[in-house]
Amino acid sequence: MTGVQTCALPIFLISPKTVISLLIIILIACVAGSLIPQVTDKSPSYFEMWKEKNIYTYRLVNRLQLNRVYTSFWFLSAIFLVMVSLGYSIYLQVRKNLKQPAERRTQITEKTDLTNKDSARIKEVLKKRHYRERNTSNSGQQLIFTKNSIGRWGSVIFHAGLLLVIVSALISLAFQKRGFVQLIEGETFDGRDYDFLVKDMGIFAKDLSAGFKTQLSGFTHTYWNNNQVRFVESSLTIINDEKTSRHMLSVNNPLVVKGIKIYQSLDYGYALSFILKKTSGEDIITRFTLDRPADVKNPALGKSDFPTTGYLFEMKFYPDITKPSFYPAKPILYLTVYKNRSADPSQIIFNGLLLPGNAVKLNGDVLYFTDIRSWSGLIFAENPGMFITYAGFISGITGVVIIFLIPYKELHLSVDASGNIAIKGITKRYDALFKEEMEAIENELREGIKEASGHRQSFVRENG
Image 1: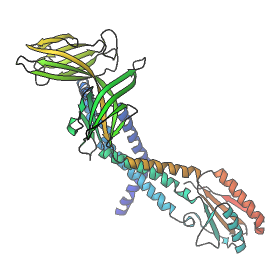
Image 2 (image 1 turned 45 degrees about the vertical axis):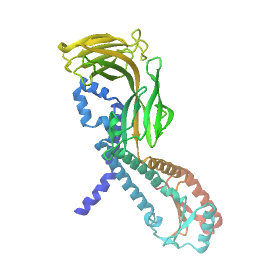
Image 3 (image 1 turned 90 degrees about the horizontal axis):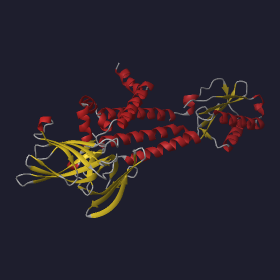
Image 4 (image 1 turned 180 degrees about the vertical axis):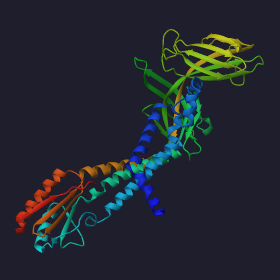
Protein backbone atom coordinates (compact mmCIF):
# COMPACT_ATOMS: atom_id res chain seq x y z
CA MET A 1 0.00 0.00 0.00
CA THR A 2 2.83 2.34 0.85
CA GLY A 3 4.57 1.67 -2.46
CA VAL A 4 1.44 2.58 -4.41
CA GLN A 5 1.13 5.90 -2.58
CA THR A 6 4.79 6.71 -3.26
CA CYS A 7 4.35 6.19 -6.99
CA ALA A 8 1.05 8.04 -7.16
CA LEU A 9 2.47 11.43 -6.20
CA PRO A 10 5.02 11.75 -9.08
CA ILE A 11 2.39 10.54 -11.54
CA PHE A 12 -0.02 13.14 -10.21
CA LEU A 13 2.60 15.91 -10.59
CA ILE A 14 3.19 15.20 -14.29
CA SER A 15 -0.41 14.44 -15.23
CA PRO A 16 -1.84 16.79 -17.90
CA LYS A 17 -4.63 17.95 -15.56
CA THR A 18 -2.16 18.95 -12.85
CA VAL A 19 0.19 20.76 -15.24
CA ILE A 20 -2.65 22.60 -16.99
CA SER A 21 -4.19 23.59 -13.64
CA LEU A 22 -0.87 25.00 -12.39
CA LEU A 23 -0.33 26.92 -15.63
CA ILE A 24 -3.86 28.37 -15.39
CA ILE A 25 -3.18 29.49 -11.78
CA ILE A 26 0.06 31.18 -12.85
CA LEU A 27 -1.68 32.81 -15.83
CA ILE A 28 -4.45 34.14 -13.57
CA ALA A 29 -1.81 35.46 -11.17
CA CYS A 30 0.03 37.27 -13.96
CA VAL A 31 -3.22 38.82 -15.21
CA ALA A 32 -4.10 39.88 -11.66
CA GLY A 33 -0.64 41.36 -11.19
CA SER A 34 -1.10 43.39 -14.38
CA LEU A 35 -4.63 44.62 -13.68
CA ILE A 36 -4.52 45.13 -9.90
CA PRO A 37 -2.19 47.89 -8.64
CA GLN A 38 0.78 46.45 -6.77
CA VAL A 39 2.03 48.01 -3.54
CA THR A 40 5.43 48.97 -4.96
CA ASP A 41 4.01 50.51 -8.12
CA LYS A 42 1.64 53.03 -6.53
CA SER A 43 1.93 55.65 -3.82
CA PRO A 44 0.46 54.97 -0.35
CA SER A 45 -2.12 57.72 -0.90
CA TYR A 46 -3.51 55.75 -3.85
CA PHE A 47 -4.35 52.81 -1.60
CA GLU A 48 -5.70 55.11 1.10
CA MET A 49 -8.11 56.62 -1.43
CA TRP A 50 -9.05 53.11 -2.60
CA LYS A 51 -9.71 52.06 1.00
CA GLU A 52 -11.99 55.06 1.53
CA LYS A 53 -13.98 54.48 -1.66
CA ASN A 54 -14.47 50.72 -1.33
CA ILE A 55 -13.10 49.25 1.87
CA TYR A 56 -14.56 45.77 1.27
CA THR A 57 -12.90 45.32 -2.11
CA TYR A 58 -9.64 46.62 -0.67
CA ARG A 59 -9.78 44.17 2.24
CA LEU A 60 -10.49 41.24 -0.09
CA VAL A 61 -7.60 42.16 -2.37
CA ASN A 62 -5.28 42.67 0.59
CA ARG A 63 -6.18 39.38 2.29
CA LEU A 64 -5.71 37.40 -0.92
CA GLN A 65 -2.40 39.23 -1.43
CA LEU A 66 -3.53 40.30 -4.90
CA ASN A 67 -1.82 43.66 -4.39
CA ARG A 68 1.50 41.81 -3.91
CA VAL A 69 0.91 38.83 -6.19
CA TYR A 70 4.49 37.90 -7.04
CA THR A 71 5.64 37.54 -3.44
CA SER A 72 2.44 35.88 -2.18
CA PHE A 73 2.68 32.45 -0.60
CA TRP A 74 0.14 30.87 -2.97
CA PHE A 75 1.93 32.11 -6.11
CA LEU A 76 5.31 30.86 -4.86
CA SER A 77 3.69 27.49 -4.05
CA ALA A 78 2.34 27.20 -7.61
CA ILE A 79 5.77 28.02 -9.07
CA PHE A 80 7.38 25.44 -6.77
CA LEU A 81 4.96 22.72 -7.89
CA VAL A 82 5.65 23.55 -11.55
CA MET A 83 9.37 23.25 -10.83
CA VAL A 84 8.92 19.83 -9.18
CA SER A 85 6.69 18.62 -12.03
CA LEU A 86 9.14 19.74 -14.69
CA GLY A 87 12.09 18.28 -12.79
CA TYR A 88 10.44 14.86 -12.55
CA SER A 89 9.54 14.99 -16.24
CA ILE A 90 13.19 15.66 -17.11
CA TYR A 91 14.24 12.75 -14.92
CA LEU A 92 11.94 10.41 -16.86
CA GLN A 93 13.28 11.68 -20.19
CA VAL A 94 16.89 11.18 -19.11
CA ARG A 95 16.16 7.65 -17.85
CA LYS A 96 14.49 6.79 -21.16
CA ASN A 97 17.35 8.16 -23.26
CA LEU A 98 19.96 6.24 -21.28
CA LYS A 99 18.41 2.94 -22.29
CA GLN A 100 19.95 1.17 -25.30
CA PRO A 101 17.84 1.37 -28.50
CA ALA A 102 17.65 -2.42 -28.80
CA GLU A 103 16.32 -2.69 -25.25
CA ARG A 104 13.51 -0.22 -25.70
CA ARG A 105 12.53 -0.49 -29.36
CA THR A 106 13.34 -3.79 -31.02
CA GLN A 107 12.31 -7.37 -30.58
CA ILE A 108 14.05 -9.83 -32.93
CA THR A 109 11.81 -12.61 -34.17
CA GLU A 110 12.38 -14.97 -37.08
CA LYS A 111 15.55 -13.19 -38.14
CA THR A 112 18.60 -14.86 -39.66
CA ASP A 113 22.18 -13.68 -39.30
CA LEU A 114 23.63 -11.07 -41.64
CA THR A 115 26.63 -12.30 -43.59
CA ASN A 116 29.97 -10.58 -43.19
CA LYS A 117 29.68 -9.34 -46.76
CA ASP A 118 26.25 -7.84 -46.11
CA SER A 119 27.43 -6.20 -42.91
CA ALA A 120 30.49 -4.69 -44.55
CA ARG A 121 28.47 -3.24 -47.42
CA ILE A 122 25.80 -1.81 -45.08
CA LYS A 123 28.42 -0.23 -42.83
CA GLU A 124 30.20 1.31 -45.83
CA VAL A 125 26.99 2.87 -47.22
CA LEU A 126 25.80 4.26 -43.88
CA LYS A 127 29.22 5.58 -42.89
CA LYS A 128 29.16 7.84 -45.96
CA ARG A 129 25.89 9.24 -44.70
CA HIS A 130 27.40 9.93 -41.26
CA TYR A 131 25.59 7.14 -39.45
CA ARG A 132 27.32 5.48 -36.53
CA GLU A 133 26.95 1.85 -35.56
CA ARG A 134 25.69 1.04 -32.10
CA ASN A 135 26.89 -2.02 -30.29
CA THR A 136 24.13 -4.52 -29.51
CA SER A 137 24.05 -8.00 -28.04
CA ASN A 138 22.41 -9.25 -31.25
CA SER A 139 24.90 -7.81 -33.70
CA GLY A 140 24.86 -10.94 -35.84
CA GLN A 141 21.13 -10.73 -36.47
CA GLN A 142 20.68 -6.98 -36.61
CA LEU A 143 22.71 -3.84 -37.21
CA ILE A 144 21.65 -0.59 -35.54
CA PHE A 145 22.90 2.77 -36.79
CA THR A 146 22.22 6.22 -35.36
CA LYS A 147 22.69 9.76 -36.64
CA ASN A 148 22.51 13.04 -34.72
CA SER A 149 22.60 11.28 -31.36
CA ILE A 150 22.48 14.63 -29.61
CA GLY A 151 19.01 15.04 -31.09
CA ARG A 152 17.71 12.57 -28.50
CA TRP A 153 18.68 15.10 -25.83
CA GLY A 154 17.15 18.18 -27.45
CA SER A 155 13.95 17.92 -25.45
CA VAL A 156 15.89 17.34 -22.22
CA ILE A 157 18.11 20.37 -22.84
CA PHE A 158 15.08 22.52 -23.70
CA HIS A 159 13.14 21.47 -20.60
CA ALA A 160 16.28 21.88 -18.48
CA GLY A 161 16.38 25.48 -19.69
CA LEU A 162 12.77 25.96 -18.65
CA LEU A 163 13.59 24.43 -15.28
CA LEU A 164 16.48 26.86 -14.77
CA VAL A 165 14.22 29.81 -15.60
CA ILE A 166 11.61 28.57 -13.10
CA VAL A 167 14.26 27.97 -10.42
CA SER A 168 15.58 31.48 -11.05
CA ALA A 169 12.06 32.92 -10.78
CA LEU A 170 11.49 31.04 -7.52
CA ILE A 171 14.76 32.30 -6.03
CA SER A 172 14.07 35.82 -7.25
CA LEU A 173 10.53 35.91 -5.87
CA ALA A 174 11.51 34.33 -2.55
CA PHE A 175 14.46 36.67 -1.98
CA GLN A 176 13.53 39.74 -4.01
CA LYS A 177 13.42 43.19 -2.44
CA ARG A 178 11.32 46.00 -3.87
CA GLY A 179 10.77 49.43 -2.40
CA PHE A 180 8.79 52.46 -3.54
CA VAL A 181 9.69 56.04 -2.75
CA GLN A 182 8.20 59.43 -3.67
CA LEU A 183 11.08 61.75 -4.39
CA ILE A 184 10.36 65.48 -4.64
CA GLU A 185 12.43 67.68 -6.94
CA GLY A 186 15.52 68.85 -5.09
CA GLU A 187 15.25 66.27 -2.32
CA THR A 188 17.71 63.47 -1.55
CA PHE A 189 16.76 59.91 -0.65
CA ASP A 190 19.26 58.30 1.72
CA GLY A 191 18.39 54.76 0.61
CA ARG A 192 17.97 53.30 4.09
CA ASP A 193 15.55 50.46 4.65
CA TYR A 194 13.14 52.45 6.83
CA ASP A 195 13.08 55.40 4.39
CA PHE A 196 11.00 53.52 1.80
CA LEU A 197 7.31 54.41 1.79
CA VAL A 198 6.30 50.89 0.75
CA LYS A 199 8.24 47.64 0.58
CA ASP A 200 7.38 44.30 -0.97
CA MET A 201 9.80 41.67 0.27
CA GLY A 202 10.15 38.00 -0.60
CA ILE A 203 9.35 35.57 2.20
CA PHE A 204 13.08 35.01 2.83
CA ALA A 205 14.23 38.59 2.14
CA LYS A 206 15.30 40.88 4.94
CA ASP A 207 16.81 44.37 4.84
CA LEU A 208 16.53 46.61 1.77
CA SER A 209 19.22 49.27 1.89
CA ALA A 210 20.50 50.86 -1.31
CA GLY A 211 23.93 51.80 0.03
CA PHE A 212 23.92 55.11 -1.88
CA LYS A 213 21.97 58.38 -1.98
CA THR A 214 19.66 59.47 -4.77
CA GLN A 215 18.70 63.07 -5.52
CA LEU A 216 15.93 64.06 -7.91
CA SER A 217 17.40 66.98 -9.87
CA GLY A 218 14.48 67.32 -12.29
CA PHE A 219 11.34 65.65 -13.55
CA THR A 220 9.73 65.74 -17.00
CA HIS A 221 6.35 64.45 -18.15
CA THR A 222 4.78 64.87 -21.58
CA TYR A 223 1.46 63.75 -23.10
CA TRP A 224 -0.18 62.85 -26.40
CA ASN A 225 -3.08 64.84 -27.80
CA ASN A 226 -5.54 62.50 -26.04
CA ASN A 227 -3.83 63.35 -22.71
CA GLN A 228 -2.33 59.86 -22.34
CA VAL A 229 1.19 59.70 -20.93
CA ARG A 230 3.79 59.95 -23.66
CA PHE A 231 7.06 60.21 -21.78
CA VAL A 232 8.19 60.29 -18.14
CA GLU A 233 11.79 60.98 -17.19
CA SER A 234 13.66 61.72 -13.97
CA SER A 235 17.04 63.40 -13.78
CA LEU A 236 18.91 61.71 -10.92
CA THR A 237 22.13 62.49 -9.11
CA ILE A 238 23.63 59.39 -7.52
CA ILE A 239 25.89 60.00 -4.53
CA ASN A 240 28.00 56.89 -3.99
CA ASP A 241 30.92 56.99 -1.53
CA GLU A 242 31.17 60.76 -1.94
CA LYS A 243 31.29 60.39 -5.72
CA THR A 244 28.44 61.91 -7.70
CA SER A 245 27.14 61.01 -11.15
CA ARG A 246 24.19 62.22 -13.22
CA HIS A 247 21.76 59.84 -14.88
CA MET A 248 18.51 60.06 -16.84
CA LEU A 249 15.87 57.54 -15.78
CA SER A 250 12.81 56.67 -17.88
CA VAL A 251 10.30 53.84 -18.08
CA ASN A 252 12.30 51.93 -20.71
CA ASN A 253 15.70 52.94 -19.38
CA PRO A 254 16.25 51.66 -15.81
CA LEU A 255 19.42 52.36 -13.86
CA VAL A 256 21.64 49.84 -12.05
CA VAL A 257 23.76 51.02 -9.11
CA LYS A 258 25.64 48.59 -6.81
CA GLY A 259 23.39 45.70 -7.79
CA ILE A 260 20.20 47.71 -7.16
CA LYS A 261 18.02 48.37 -10.19
CA ILE A 262 16.05 51.63 -10.17
CA TYR A 263 12.87 51.83 -12.25
CA GLN A 264 10.84 54.87 -13.24
CA SER A 265 7.28 54.49 -12.00
CA LEU A 266 4.29 55.86 -13.91
CA ASP A 267 3.01 57.06 -10.54
CA TYR A 268 3.91 60.71 -10.03
CA GLY A 269 2.28 63.99 -9.12
CA TYR A 270 2.57 67.25 -7.22
CA ALA A 271 4.10 68.23 -3.87
CA LEU A 272 2.42 71.18 -2.13
CA SER A 273 4.52 72.93 0.53
CA PHE A 274 3.06 74.75 3.55
CA ILE A 275 4.34 76.66 6.57
CA LEU A 276 2.14 76.91 9.65
CA LYS A 277 3.11 79.76 11.95
CA LYS A 278 1.62 79.02 15.33
CA THR A 279 0.67 81.63 17.89
CA SER A 280 3.45 80.27 20.10
CA GLY A 281 5.98 81.38 17.49
CA GLU A 282 6.75 77.84 16.30
CA ASP A 283 6.98 77.26 12.52
CA ILE A 284 5.86 73.88 11.18
CA ILE A 285 6.94 73.07 7.61
CA THR A 286 5.37 70.20 5.71
CA ARG A 287 4.60 68.92 2.22
CA PHE A 288 1.63 66.98 0.92
CA THR A 289 2.08 64.76 -2.12
CA LEU A 290 -0.89 64.43 -4.47
CA ASP A 291 -1.14 61.83 -7.22
CA ARG A 292 -1.59 63.06 -10.77
CA PRO A 293 -5.27 62.59 -11.68
CA ALA A 294 -6.14 59.96 -14.26
CA ASP A 295 -8.27 62.45 -16.21
CA VAL A 296 -6.92 65.89 -17.10
CA LYS A 297 -10.35 67.38 -16.35
CA ASN A 298 -10.22 66.27 -12.71
CA PRO A 299 -8.25 67.85 -9.88
CA ALA A 300 -5.52 66.09 -7.93
CA LEU A 301 -7.05 64.96 -4.66
CA GLY A 302 -5.53 64.58 -1.22
CA LYS A 303 -6.60 64.16 2.40
CA SER A 304 -4.16 64.10 5.29
CA ASP A 305 -3.43 65.25 8.84
CA PHE A 306 -1.16 68.23 9.31
CA PRO A 307 1.79 66.89 11.36
CA THR A 308 1.94 67.73 15.09
CA THR A 309 -1.37 69.60 14.91
CA GLY A 310 -5.02 68.68 15.16
CA TYR A 311 -5.80 69.90 11.64
CA LEU A 312 -7.08 67.72 8.82
CA PHE A 313 -6.53 68.97 5.26
CA GLU A 314 -8.77 68.04 2.34
CA MET A 315 -7.29 69.26 -0.94
CA LYS A 316 -8.39 69.66 -4.55
CA PHE A 317 -5.50 70.92 -6.64
CA TYR A 318 -5.97 72.32 -10.17
CA PRO A 319 -2.62 72.67 -12.04
CA ASP A 320 -4.10 75.29 -14.39
CA ILE A 321 -7.27 77.16 -13.49
CA THR A 322 -7.64 78.49 -17.04
CA LYS A 323 -7.79 75.12 -18.84
CA PRO A 324 -7.49 71.37 -18.24
CA SER A 325 -3.80 70.61 -17.96
CA PHE A 326 -1.30 68.49 -16.08
CA TYR A 327 1.25 71.30 -16.00
CA PRO A 328 1.12 73.76 -13.05
CA ALA A 329 1.09 76.93 -15.17
CA LYS A 330 -1.58 78.79 -13.17
CA PRO A 331 -2.22 76.54 -10.18
CA ILE A 332 -4.92 76.98 -7.59
CA LEU A 333 -5.82 74.95 -4.50
CA TYR A 334 -9.29 74.40 -3.13
CA LEU A 335 -8.60 73.72 0.54
CA THR A 336 -10.86 72.59 3.36
CA VAL A 337 -9.37 72.51 6.87
CA TYR A 338 -11.00 70.62 9.74
CA LYS A 339 -10.02 70.91 13.37
CA ASN A 340 -9.63 67.95 15.74
CA ARG A 341 -8.78 65.66 12.78
CA SER A 342 -12.43 65.12 12.03
CA ALA A 343 -14.13 65.35 8.63
CA ASP A 344 -17.34 66.45 10.30
CA PRO A 345 -18.67 69.55 8.45
CA SER A 346 -19.22 71.22 11.82
CA GLN A 347 -15.43 71.09 12.37
CA ILE A 348 -14.56 73.15 9.27
CA ILE A 349 -12.43 76.20 10.10
CA PHE A 350 -11.47 77.11 6.52
CA ASN A 351 -12.99 76.39 3.15
CA GLY A 352 -11.72 78.33 0.14
CA LEU A 353 -9.22 78.89 -2.65
CA LEU A 354 -5.50 79.47 -2.23
CA LEU A 355 -2.84 80.57 -4.70
CA PRO A 356 0.88 79.91 -4.15
CA GLY A 357 2.12 82.66 -1.83
CA ASN A 358 -1.27 83.18 -0.17
CA ALA A 359 -1.83 82.92 3.58
CA VAL A 360 -4.92 82.22 5.67
CA LYS A 361 -5.68 82.26 9.39
CA LEU A 362 -6.58 79.05 11.20
CA ASN A 363 -7.78 79.72 14.76
CA GLY A 364 -5.06 82.28 15.33
CA ASP A 365 -2.39 80.30 13.48
CA VAL A 366 -1.30 81.46 10.03
CA LEU A 367 -1.00 78.99 7.14
CA TYR A 368 1.20 79.87 4.14
CA PHE A 369 0.90 78.07 0.82
CA THR A 370 4.53 78.41 -0.24
CA ASP A 371 5.53 76.16 -3.13
CA ILE A 372 4.56 73.58 -5.76
CA ARG A 373 6.97 70.99 -7.07
CA SER A 374 6.74 67.70 -8.92
CA TRP A 375 7.43 64.37 -7.32
CA SER A 376 8.52 61.20 -9.08
CA GLY A 377 7.84 57.61 -8.08
CA LEU A 378 10.99 55.49 -8.03
CA ILE A 379 11.13 51.74 -7.56
CA PHE A 380 14.28 50.18 -6.09
CA ALA A 381 14.60 46.45 -6.74
CA GLU A 382 17.14 43.77 -5.97
CA ASN A 383 16.52 40.43 -7.72
CA PRO A 384 19.04 37.65 -7.01
CA GLY A 385 19.43 34.67 -9.31
CA MET A 386 19.24 36.53 -12.62
CA PHE A 387 22.37 34.76 -13.92
CA ILE A 388 20.44 31.47 -13.64
CA THR A 389 17.75 32.99 -15.86
CA TYR A 390 20.29 33.79 -18.56
CA ALA A 391 21.68 30.25 -18.36
CA GLY A 392 18.12 28.93 -18.68
CA PHE A 393 17.44 30.99 -21.79
CA ILE A 394 20.67 29.78 -23.39
CA SER A 395 19.83 26.16 -22.57
CA GLY A 396 16.26 26.55 -23.84
CA ILE A 397 17.33 28.09 -27.13
CA THR A 398 20.01 25.42 -27.56
CA GLY A 399 17.39 22.73 -26.99
CA VAL A 400 15.06 24.24 -29.60
CA VAL A 401 17.89 24.39 -32.16
CA ILE A 402 18.74 20.73 -31.51
CA ILE A 403 15.10 19.61 -31.68
CA PHE A 404 14.37 21.27 -35.02
CA LEU A 405 17.74 21.36 -36.77
CA ILE A 406 19.45 18.17 -35.56
CA PRO A 407 16.71 15.51 -35.41
CA TYR A 408 17.68 12.09 -34.08
CA LYS A 409 17.62 9.23 -36.61
CA GLU A 410 17.90 5.48 -36.09
CA LEU A 411 18.09 2.61 -38.60
CA HIS A 412 17.66 -1.12 -37.86
CA LEU A 413 18.84 -3.50 -40.62
CA SER A 414 18.30 -7.26 -40.52
CA VAL A 415 17.59 -10.29 -42.73
CA ASP A 416 14.16 -11.85 -42.36
CA ALA A 417 13.29 -15.56 -42.71
CA SER A 418 12.87 -15.15 -46.52
CA GLY A 419 16.35 -13.75 -46.96
CA ASN A 420 15.26 -10.16 -47.60
CA ILE A 421 17.08 -7.25 -45.96
CA ALA A 422 14.56 -5.32 -43.85
CA ILE A 423 15.10 -1.68 -42.91
CA LYS A 424 13.27 -0.12 -40.01
CA GLY A 425 13.64 3.62 -39.45
CA ILE A 426 12.86 5.76 -36.43
CA THR A 427 12.98 9.54 -36.22
CA LYS A 428 11.30 12.30 -34.26
CA ARG A 429 11.11 15.01 -36.92
CA TYR A 430 10.57 15.42 -40.66
CA ASP A 431 9.14 12.02 -41.58
CA ALA A 432 8.96 12.75 -45.31
CA LEU A 433 12.63 13.73 -45.56
CA PHE A 434 13.67 10.71 -43.54
CA LYS A 435 11.65 8.41 -45.78
CA GLU A 436 13.42 9.83 -48.85
CA GLU A 437 16.76 9.20 -47.17
CA MET A 438 15.79 5.61 -46.39
CA GLU A 439 14.78 5.05 -50.01
CA ALA A 440 18.16 6.36 -51.19
CA ILE A 441 19.93 4.02 -48.75
CA GLU A 442 17.78 1.14 -50.00
CA ASN A 443 18.78 1.84 -53.61
CA GLU A 444 22.46 1.93 -52.71
CA LEU A 445 22.18 -1.36 -50.87
CA ARG A 446 20.24 -2.98 -53.74
CA GLU A 447 23.00 -2.08 -56.15
CA GLY A 448 25.73 -3.49 -53.92
CA ILE A 449 24.11 -6.58 -52.44
CA LYS A 450 22.91 -9.33 -54.72
CA GLU A 451 20.54 -10.74 -52.11
CA ALA A 452 18.60 -7.46 -51.96
CA SER A 453 16.65 -8.17 -55.17
CA GLY A 454 13.57 -9.00 -53.16
CA HIS A 455 14.14 -6.22 -50.65
CA ARG A 456 11.25 -4.74 -48.77
CA GLN A 457 11.24 -1.68 -46.52
CA SER A 458 9.26 -0.74 -43.43
CA PHE A 459 9.08 2.79 -41.98
CA VAL A 460 8.12 3.47 -38.39
CA ARG A 461 7.95 6.83 -36.62
CA GLU A 462 8.36 7.10 -32.90
CA ASN A 463 6.72 10.00 -31.09
CA GLY A 464 9.28 11.58 -28.80
